Length: 402
Length: 227
Image 1: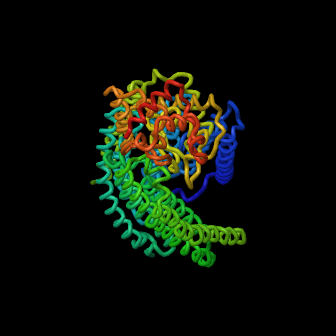
Image 2: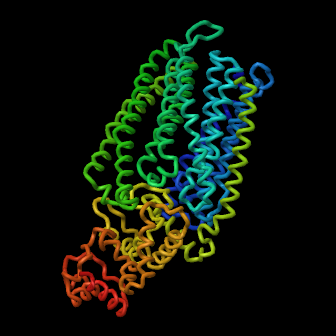
């Protein structure tokens, strides 16, 4: 957005990268040691807290929050010049606000202690799992995409800001109170279910609008750069392809599969069946995963000369199809049919049966379980490996150039 | 919609949503104690929760619907298996699981008692009648007692016999169905099985149920009557 980097920014970014590594590997190691009962009384701080998705010890959580705060400071430094320029002020500020929400809304992850009540912990847990991830991450992702389009000159600041506000209304309007759809059966009050269900039902509206949005998005990628007259899709073709994948999976994974299971009448029978990871996997890898790859490809393209890029691009092309096809196969051959079979079993014999060996040992169910293999193989061999290869080739080219 | 209108709709809409959401959170915290019988949270229940975490039960089992998807949900397991039923599964898990094995976790007897206390408390949480069909079990047991059926029938439920045996349409399939057991076995054999299952069938995998002399009598009365 500013076109240049403040002094010392590279050092800060590298430091943050190392810190991220420390938190990831440290917390994983801590969880493993904690499960093996090696921490004694320190289990809560260093080991495994025992909560799904908030497994990491409290000390690692604090470090993560500090890291996120450091990340916002780095962004603030980088964006400072843009914020004093009226032509870019609004979009730069929006970017910063969306970024500040990320460390801020991670704090509820620490609003309970080791002796907290089960249902109370679940309240705060979903402030993180739903509100933080599905609300504020989505907001940040939207702003990020708008910023990319703006900085490539595809859209004006006015359009970018408008898109961000509209998307944010959709995500946060139904998403904040919609968090309630995780609390139906965890010992919360009835009004939570009523409002949670109502707002979740409203997700049909953003879902429909997202489809229209995705269509606009497709047309945008064919657009021409205002100033240079070249089609933007040429230099950044694969970034756009990955962003289109984000739009597609947002619609399928978050939208269709998410809405399929979030009303109480479905959720009552569906909670804890494979239809939940069906939504979770498609939305997580499809939206955030593809967005991360899009940003990485954008970064690689920016640092490489045209000749070097040509060599990297071959791997990226394979990876794009590999990742999407792999994810698609996983959903179509394994998670969705498995989930439907399990839901049917809940309706026939109850939840206990559907999660017990009587159901899971069935012939068709085990066949569906094994059908996970082809999709995962495609994802890894044709998606992840070429992406790593692209990074390797790009790293060598950059090293040679500088 | 112009960018300016969108901006206002966004700020007002988000603010409103946040207010509703915060009120819900406050409301939950106000009601959670009564919805979950927090007054029954004894030291033993807390110790039991620690056992639940220590052996990482959540890795395979869900509780309140959250956790691993490999094994049944434990929210209402106390209704389903009863104290002795839960203990028997944890002590000799391999007998209760088929191709997908629950590991033997070497849980001590004290820990096991605490764990049961925790699961008993969990079963009392008001989950809006979730999970499907589990409430039916409690109704059957409570209804049976309310109707004044024999003490043996109550023992059958409380000692976790339903974990493996079926009566009519309810119960597990690991052990033989007992709906008409009184027609197949005489009282003497039934009592011998309850004392030491292997004395009748050397290949039996059923653990000897922990029953006092009187309890064995009452349960035998009940089973003999099932013809």
